[in-house]
Length: 66
Image (cartoon, rainbow, N blue to C red; front, side):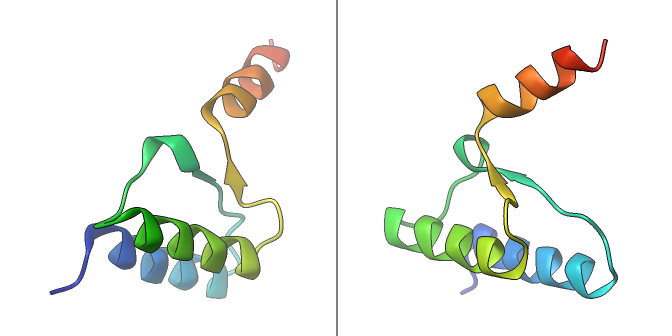
């Protein structure tokens, strides 16, 4: 059975291959285990440096846009 986060890694990879600029908020997603969660985030970070972000970083960046 495929874990929900594993499916997100493939979606992320598909978007990356389609030349999309991708970001994932690491403290807003989960996996079937902590190991699966961490492995998926490492895979996303490998594809796009800076892809994995924390919610506080994203909110701060959004606030600075105004």
